[in-house]
Image (cartoon, rainbow, N blue to C red):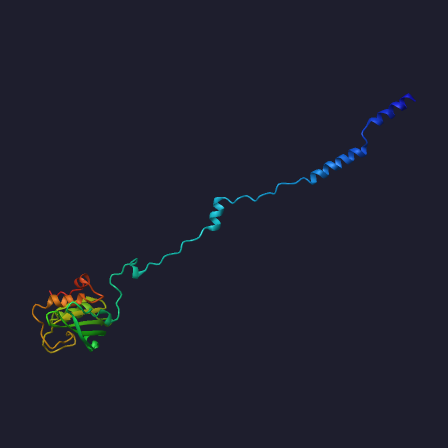
Length: 212
């Protein structure tokens, strides 16, 4: 009997199993209801941002009207675009046609101008046909034809003169005028050429025909 009382006394001091189970359950419940800090997505690295936002620069095409692509000569325009401007004592007296095929061309313009000293000049801009040599046509005009000033800018031959030789015309002769050249009029003829909006001093000099 004394042993039985000792065992019972010991059991009475132990924590009931139900209390332990309840305590474990409560602890677990509090853990499941614990508020968690939201997880932030990692900030993309600089290399990732660059990859997403990188763009390719557009390719620039060279523009001939702005000079980014150089050309040996300006693009030829229609014959009338070569007509010299009036002013400073120059007056356009009229324009007429010509047999351009007879002269070795396909199109052109011919105009008469009254000069500052009262001398009449003729201006000619002729587009040379394919296969013909503009330089040779220019020499035919100035050398045998005695045209005062001739400059060549393929496919054009351009001339200004106060007259031509009064000889029988041939297929390679210059555009004819009914008077011979006026002595000392060469500087004015060159001035008339330079007044063309498509010419200037350098272009006239670069294409000048040499009879030597």
